[in-house]
Length: 312
Image 1 (cartoon, helix red, strand yellow):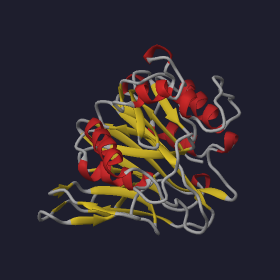
Image 2 (cartoon, one colour):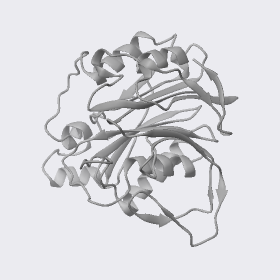
Image 3 (tube, one colour):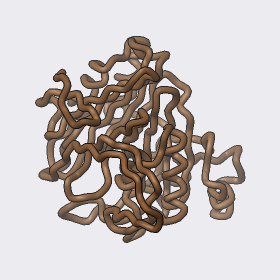
């Protein structure tokens, strides 16, 4: 239902990392763009996430979030250090917990606690180990899923994919990379849960690291090696590849407004919010839409002061 992508500096017109995501939510859910300032906390304080309470850290970074109004977590966002994260719903063979951290909680926690994309990735995987993921992900009906993420800063980007407590992560090396609602890492990644391969071997799903394929092993309902360009995931990847070498903020916005493949989604699920970010060591800029249908709305540049700087 959502799509997230990133273009690395060797692919972009301005030499920055460019990130984009549409957040597709059940029709009628309200999604807000909010700024939460940095804050220092006393020891032994807790933070109330959507369904569970966990220990708070001593300091959180300022974050700019696009979040469904009813939940604590966020579909996507940025922090003051120049980290951006977006998540995707994925369905896996691992059981779904009734209560835990939502993928959206993990997005917000990663941004509040991670100074770099890699540090935010370690924040998320540590929280997965400690508390697990789970809980109803919709406001008005039952929906539970696992999560994948793209995490990026001005220097690098990562894909993190999860199945229950298990996970693998891939450092993005190609010019562009996208994720949708399917597991996509075809091997054991660059980082992984320490027991994931041993677990898969014991289940009879592979014989070891050489034939370990996270997407094939953990995808619920089967897995296809081919990707149709008529699918949402396939269309996003096609548009990203077609723009390699000239990828811009305007390119990202255009992709997120695309109707072919249902990238800009209308219907029972709708694109309720959208984010495009340009990340540079010299500074980061972020544009958001906080109403349904990117095809019908302007992107507004947002700062950590909460103001709208310009419109595209």
